[in-house]
Image (cartoon, rainbow, N blue to C red; front, side, top):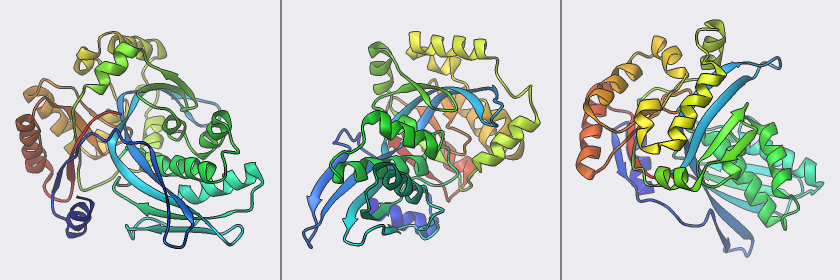
Length: 330
């Protein structure tokens, strides 16, 4: 299926992938042909089921309140220790992804070796599926996958709190990938709280059509636009917490309370997104929302036929060059 996906992306054709829920372990340890131990780590995409931006902090970061889940679709990262001290090699199947210090995986390796004092070299082979500019946290997930892999191969010198410190330094989306199941994030992403068992089970039962247009959205641009148009772009903290509480108390009413503060900001430049979401909200009962700062969106579906209808509607509205995936929360 991965080969088919890569061929369709390279050809620019619309790709519709019906993926199974992946409840496999987060890594697979094996020996390479040369006898070197490697880890292959699943780096899942994330979806913001709820995302409120409540203001801007003095340090320039924005305050967030968000309900986030990782999903059963994402990248694979193979991590291997190399015999050359301090070496960092990144290989990727996508030629548009940087393989130097511009890649967050490289930065993760720098932070890991600096924190541990280890001189090990590492090779990373990245099978990329999560597109850039989608709001799905692909780069962040890969970086945290690198931290996990390096730590495991090195004999776990870092504790979970240690890894969390590094993840916070890497970026706002990174810390959540050190947790399992849906979580609530606050602050700039460093304050993370597990949800109740009832909310977790309800979210885990969701089936989501994940779709993205041919274009991506730059996160830094989206935040600048939000700040430039403040304060009207921010949701009051009390209102954000109230809406979140409604979702966590009544997960079956996600469609009523789901919010993404970026939708209005992004919609001014990319009206194709709010136009399609408006149509989906009119014609389907399931919650539909944009993830992060976009451009990927999702809709809760109940059957294969409903998934096919969503795919047809997305294809008609956005044309070719995007993708549709059938995913489940992890």
